[in-house]
Each structure stands twice: as structure tokens, then as C-alpha cells.
Length: 292
Ligand code: G4P
Image 1 (spheres, rainbow, N blue to C red):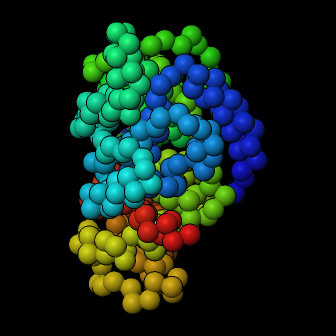
Image 2: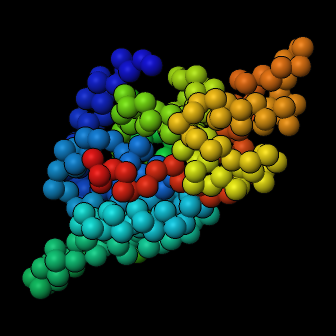
């Protein structure tokens, strides 16, 4: 997998974000609730420094609610303020200004004590591509302000967007990059559609998705694809490939001659996963990271 682009992009993104940090009171770090660690930039602590930070787990409508609760506790235990939201429907989005102001409560109290009228809290949203930054900005603004799929390098004048709840938001988010040198991270990002599928082999992406998800959510796969049973030994690659073949046969993903078209079957599995056909799923649990 080519990661040649990573260091250059990251240096530039980092510089751009650090410029914006000078203008704001609080950084809103947006993560995908289905993969909070893999969708996180590993240099984030370094980039944000001491800036007060609110972590948002986005796309909670797609994530396993029990695991989201575990992630919330894990981040809270690390001393972070964290909120779980669904930017598409807007669930919990109105709590963002409330939480952001809580983070600055001391500063606001000092201003009030001096007889000053506190100005609205200024915030910047940061996160990797596709995590939902534009969707969240639009939701907070109550109108369409951010071009979905905003990319770094597109320079335009920065503007403050007024948000209900005494908050102002920079209209352009800080764009970070995931670091997917770690194979597992890359496959998880690809499985959820955070990075382009074409960067990796689609069969590998589906294989690793099943290898992780079947032990957690096996029954849903049995039901959806009418599987004869669950694999006995997940370390045995053949058993997972057999499941992929079963799904391919079931759904008519065949090559001429009647064999299973594994590539087609893999694409189908990923499409259904992303569309939520297997229900709300999370690809990683906090304990697997805390153990490291
Ligand atoms: P970005 O600015 O961080 O790059 O992300 P963007 O807002 O463009 O969102 C990427 C995709 O994720 C969009 O889907 C968006 O609708 C979806 N999305 C964002 N937040 C949520 C959420 O909380 N829940 C769900 N289910 N989806 C969310 P898309 O397929 O690229 O576009 P579209 O279908 O919305 O047109």
C-alpha cells in the first residue's frame, strides 16, 4: 500500500490547523464511532497541544451503541470531554455548544467577574476525510455552508458561522489524515468507506472485516446470508473464505463456469455493511488499544 503521500500532506495539514488554532477557544475532534482509534490522527495530541478539546463520536447511528458507550467511558477516563452524535439526523448536535462552553467555564467566569460580557466560544472542527466534518458544520449552522468533501489546499476566506448556544465556528474544518501504515487500521478505514477501496484489495478488505465482525456479530451474518453456521476456527483463513464463497453463491456472484466471483462477493459484503444491512456495527473496542 502506498503511503508516500502521507508525510507531505500531514505537514501541510498540521501547519494549516496550527494557524487556525490561534483563532479559536476549543477544538472539536471528530471521530467515526465505528472506529474511533483508526479514524484518529495519531499526532493529534501533538497538533492540538493544550487547546481545550471536545471529542465527538460521529455516525453513532451506524455504530454498536454498547461499544459506543465503552468508547465514551474510555475517553472520559483519559480526562477528555466526549459526546456521541449523529450529524446526519442531528441527534445530540445541539449539545456541542453546551459542552464546549463547559470546557471554558473558568475562563468565562473570570470574564464575567471582571464585568466583561463573554463573547461566543470560537471553535474549529478537525478530523480525517469522510468523518462527517461538512455534515456537522452544516447541521450546526442550520444551513448548507460547507462543501461536502472539502479538501486541503482549497484556499478561501475564513468566516465565522454563528451557532445557536453562543458559539461561533470556523467555516473550513481542519483536515487531518489517518495513518494507515498499520494494516488493520487500513482495512477498517476501507471497510467503512473512510478511504478509497481501490487503495487496497477488495477481497482483503472484506476478509478482514468478516474476521473481526463475525465473532462479535456472527448471528446477524447467519441470518442475513443464510449461512449454514459460524466458523469454528477464525484463525483458519479457509473458513472465512468459505463464508465469502457461500455469500457469493447465495447472491449470484458467479464467474462463467459457475465458480464464485470473490471480488464481486466482497464488494457486495462491503456495500451491505456500509449500508447498515447487518445492523449497527463497531470495528474496534477500546480495550484492544488500551492494552497496547
Ligand atoms: P468530511 O467533510 O469529513 O469529508 O465528511 P462529509 O461531511 O462529507 O461526510 C462523509 C459522508 O458521511 C457523507 O456521506 C455523509 O452524509 C456521511 N455522514 C456524515 N455524518 C454522518 C452521520 O452521523 N451518520 C451517517 N449515517 N452518515 C454520516 P456520503 O455518502 O459521502 O454522501 P451523502 O450520501 O450524504 O450524499
